[in-house]
Length: 68
Image 1: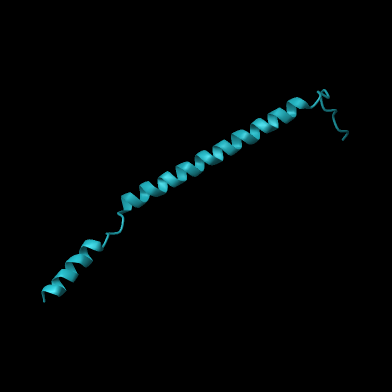
Image 2: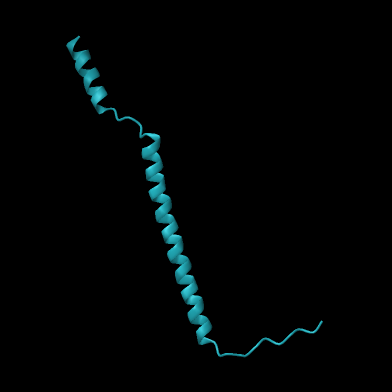
């Protein structure tokens, strides 16, 4: 009987409750914030690369109008 109680006590101590909604929400929010920052950095880098490429091109002047 004591052995069963001891096993039950150990089993209960070893169990971990599921995270609450708020804990899961905060964890997911951190993941999404990190992903959004990564996307923002990628966009900034792409825009910077495009600006550098555009500045390397010689100025061809205004684009001629197309005939209708």
